[in-house]
Length: 187
Image 1 (cartoon, rainbow, N blue to C red):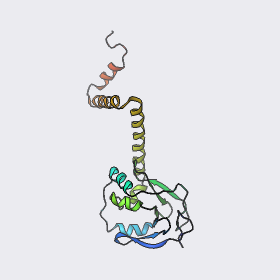
Image 2 (cartoon, helix red, strand yellow; image 1 turned 90 degrees about the vertical axis):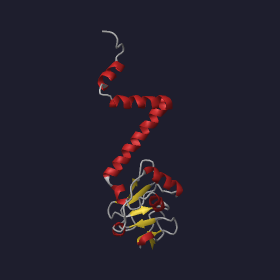
Image 3 (cartoon, one colour; image 1 turned 120 degrees about the vertical axis):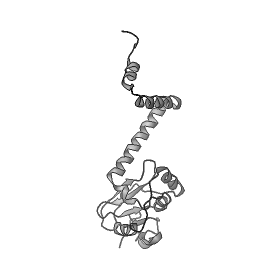
Image 4 (cartoon, rainbow, N blue to C red; image 1 turned 180 degrees about the horizontal axis):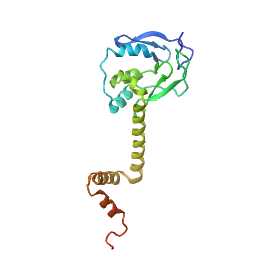
């Protein structure tokens, strides 16, 4: 008898997402348990989408997700579920059991993924390249915010233009040396 990872005591009931994808639903919190083998079987009949973070961010606004920060237990095998980010600007995570590979979807997470055409890419979220890409984007975004705050919008835009121009210029090293020299006109 599988119990809801979020509610702890509520028994999950067998149901289907569209196109006959079997899931176990919680009638209390609205979450769904997606077993890896059922998803793999269903996935064979789907055409994969393409990831667009802005599309996912917009979808998550249309379908608000109430996510818990509490540790959750896999309803099938009893292992802890681990949270995985979907994208750098996406405000929810998916919980996955690293033992049986089942995925817990909080209320509206499936709808958000479907609206962003990512419902057939769930397995990608758990790969190292996907997670490393998110980490790189998150870090770049934090630096961007820091520089914007430090320089102000106008100066930051200008320095980005100069930086791009320098990177593309074949005389780059000499130009940088000239800029760094306290008195480039003395001998």
